[in-house]
Structures are given as structure tokens and as C-alpha cells.
Image (cartoon, rainbow, N blue to C red):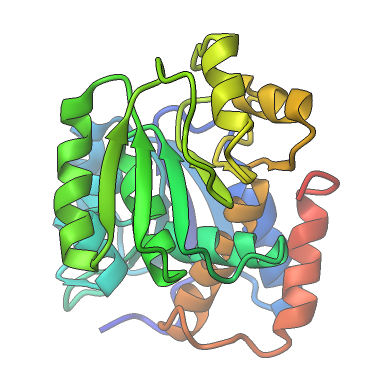
Amino acid sequence: MLNPGAARLEVWGDPISHSRSPQLHAAAYAVLGLPWEYGRREVPKASFEAELASLDDAWRGLSLTMPLKSAAFAAAAVRDRRSQLTGAANTLLLDADGHRGFNTDVGGIVRALADEGIVGAPTGRIVGAGATATSALVALAELGTHLVEVVARRPGAVEPLKALGERLGVDVVAASFAASRHADVPLTIATLPGDAQIEDAAADALANSGGLLLDVVYGHWPTALSEAWERAGGRARSGLGMLLHQAVLQVRIFVTGDPDAPLAGEDAVLAAMRAAVAPAA
């Protein structure tokens, strides 16, 4: 059973110095009047199990970033649907009876897009086919998207996303960065690392048909894709909005145990968290 007095939380990853989660969570708990401590710790994947086992009952939960989301998923005794679909947990609610794992990245994408006026999209595009692309695909499915183009350097990398798409009722088609034209879509979600190199011609082809760009990157900005969107006169948004909203869902989990249960005074909490990462979010 979760210790109701547990007051320690951290974000773990490798690297972790760039994380803005401590600012976001500190802002939330200040508004909520909770004297909780939220820190950060660099934890390589090989050390995750030992570090997790070392925590005592003063610990309430963890936020996990790369490369620990699959390890956190494996450590969870109970997992929400979004983590089950993606095989990744970015949130652990620590409980002596069995840790509970959640994926709030999916909800973070959905809520960030809602901020931009997108609450549904029949088609969409994902750039990149790594781990974050699975969360992007689940988010698009929740928006009612039925056809998703995945642009990847290796066609074989898209196969797991095609399999996930079948589970979600979404047709996933692979496309190449070498394509000179792409079908028009209202929305593109980029899941590449911030320093990923993309030739201008390839980036421009994506921007000219890509609708709104939500680039999950927030530490390296602008990116090659956001610059292409600027050249094309389109809208590009960084990953700070996603970061903000996935953190709101984490706060809900740490406070209430339920990502779908709004916080008391959540509007004020959200405003304080947004201010913590202003002006970009």
C-alpha cells in the first residue's frame, strides 16, 4: 500500500541535467500546498533496477525519461492502457504492493495539440520511428486519425508501428525522407532527436505538406524541421507544451492516483506550471 505520508519524488534519466520537470512539479506542489520534494537523478539503464530497489517508503513516485521508460514498464505490476499499448512507462507510482506504471506522454501530446485547436485529425504524419513514435501513434488514434504516414530512414523500423496501428484501427504507411512530395496532412508530429540532421530538400518537402508541426524536442530549438516550417510559412511548436501537459497528468497521478482525475484548483496549478517554462510553452 502507498504510504500516504510519502513525500519524495524524482525524475530519472541519462542524461538528465536538461530536464525541466523539477521546475514544473515544484510549481504545482507550491500551488497545492504540498511540502513535497522533487529532484532529479542521472540513472543509466543498467543501474535502474538497483536504484529502484534502494528506495524506502518515503518515496511516492518517479518520472522517467530516456532510456528508462521500457525498464519502468517492466518494473510496474499494474499498467495503464497507454503504457500497455506503447510498452513504455514514464511515470511510476510507488507502492509496496506493486508499482503502478503510466504513460502520460500520450495525453501530453493530445492536450498540447488541443492548445493549438486540434482535437481531431483524419490523417497525420509522424517523422521518426523510435520509441516516442509509439506514443505519437496512440495519441493520433485517440484523435480519430485513421491513416498515418511514418517517415523513417529505414522502412523496417516502421513495421512495429504498423503492428500497433492494426491494434488501434489505424492504417500506417511507411515513407522515405528521399520522397520529393508527400500527401497533404493537417498535422505532423516529429519524434527525432533535436540534433538530427535532415537535408533541406527533405525537410522542405515535409513542411510543404505537413500542416501544424508538433516537434517533441524542447532542449534543441530551433530544429531542422521547425526551420523548414518557418521557410514554408507554417506553424511549428516545440515539445514544451507536451512536456507541460504530461507533467500535469503526472501530478494528478502522484496526488490522486488517477491521471483522469482533475486536481483541486487545477487551472491555477496549470497556470503556475506554464509560467515555470515560459515563454515558450
